[in-house]
Amino acid sequence: MSAEEFRLLRDFVYQHCGLNFTDNSKYLLEKRLGKRLRQHNLKTFKDYYYFLRYNPNKDQELSEVIDQLTTNETYFFREDFQLRTFVEDILPEVRKRKEREGQKTLRIWSAGCSSGEEPYTIAMLLLDQPWLRSWRVEVIGTDISHRVLHMAREGIYGDASFRSTEPLQKKRFFTDYEGKSRIRDEVRSLVSISHLNLFDTSRVALLGKMDAIFCRNVIIYFDQAGKRSVVENFFQRLVPEGFLLLGHSESLINLSTAFQLRHFQHDMVYQKPLTAVTRAGGFL
Image (cartoon, rainbow, N blue to C red; front, side, top):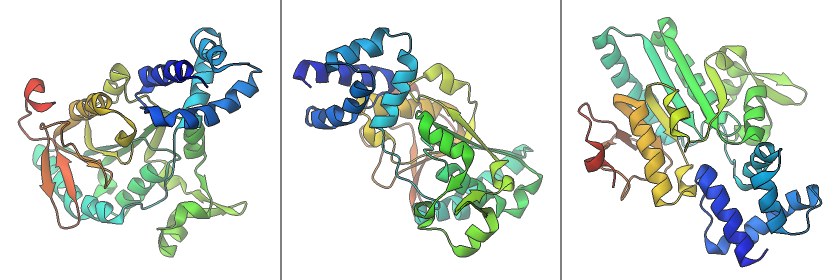
């Protein structure tokens, strides 16, 4: 892969979905996209770039590219300290606000849901809340990779997905299936899985308003401009006083002042204030 070919492919991927590859990522792109080159019997990476731009099957191929370039390391009940904050602090606040408003709906978005462990974890936690049984609960999982979305819809998992799962949780929410474990229908019924590019603002808007958004270990793959765009979309999707839960290594420093940072016992979480900051003043 020449320097020119690297720039062409890097910029093309960035414009599509915001994935940011620095100059020292050339070997990574060459190694992972080389498989696609051989798949189509193409001679050069420039040929492959033109294939992505102009071939009738370019959309399907671009989906394959995203599958090759994205990392999808996840498991059930990941980052337990944050989940405890969600259950012990965030949910009680949301419940009080909703009851005050006379509402019984709860909508949570898992943005970058990968193979489904995160949205199903959220659903399992919600099923443990007796007060939610009379509520309309929706957990929406989205990802840009069709490959992991297929896995999420199947809901069948191997041992690696259960490294933080208690035996009682596994017994309650899963059934044995051909040497693996399959999510039970009561969990699946709360979760919808769909394809979504976080940079597609018009599609993101169709999701409607959310009470909480989980986006953990996703925005680290974007540059500053990409992060700001995604975070602003999150801000617009949250109801006033809604919560944004990022990964433990992620923050909104130098990205946005529109959110409040709430300090709870086990974790710090971003919250959309009741009175929203104007766009010009809130996003840096």
